[in-house]
Length: 431
Image 1 (tube, helix red, strand yellow):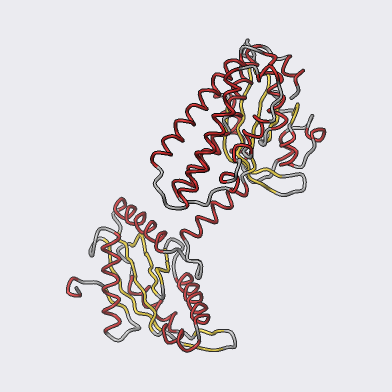
Image 2 (image 1 turned 90 degrees about the vertical axis):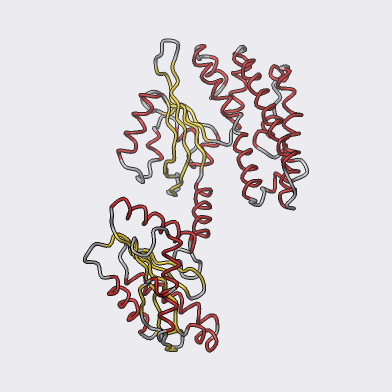
């Protein structure tokens, strides 16, 4: 989008683009979100945020301090933004360093919030000045379009691409002359169904905007995930004149989220759910059981002889054994069941949606027989272990996950005392 293109826009279209300008400037809110996540959850701060001059390293700061439009610089509120923006980053830097040192944040954090509010008010005032001066808007929007880190694409109402910015080319691999005259189908990945795109167009037609995650394909064939926001642009006669799409590549962010989720919810040795995910699934299974008036069983397993394997063959062999146990347990259960490693050589199994004919003891005996078969390690070393299993039932033995798991654990210890390699159902007499 160049200045000549903007200058041809009607007043209502200019107003629409001024609103989009405000949104582009307030992408600084993404930085605020990042800082707040570090402060609240104790995540490691971004290196830029704790550098000597952090206000010059964020996207907004680079844009602001690189601005040389004299008409814009004459706006008092715009001139005041620099000092406020610098203070905001200075306070954020101090807070992040304090958080790393486990210091109290209350007073500085309140100051941080106040400065953020002040910055937003200045940005709103600048927007009002821009709306009143089409020359400023034209020059400023051209700079935002060219320098924005987000990809921007402008199309006709029929979807033909009129213009793209450099960030579009960086993300997609398509140069401007390759994209212009084409349609966004150029990026089609095939990951989403026709229903997905039909719903997108319905939203655009009925609401005038749509946003969400979408899978697209780069010129080199790589598929990537982007966060896309599409807005319609109308003239003073309410006629649709353009669509403007703004997007960011969030593939790495999504992969990091999934990796963090996996680390937080799965045991790294066996790839089974850990205690956190087990408790979550247990509560969900209990909620379904109450709603559907069904029974549920939980088994608490402890391996007999595991310590001997560790002592005799080393912890590497013990880890290998736990991995093989996890595979055997998973193979014996239904897809709707959950098997988790709670720690050490302790495992737990949830058997949801049990009918009147369900034989929990038969499942437990099958698990006992499966784990009693020899295990083989590298070098064809063969070892044998067994397992002791305690079982509690919902609703007979308890109504919540903590009680049911505790009672299954109690029954498991009785099974061990009775000679191991067997199962035991909970009963009040075992306490």
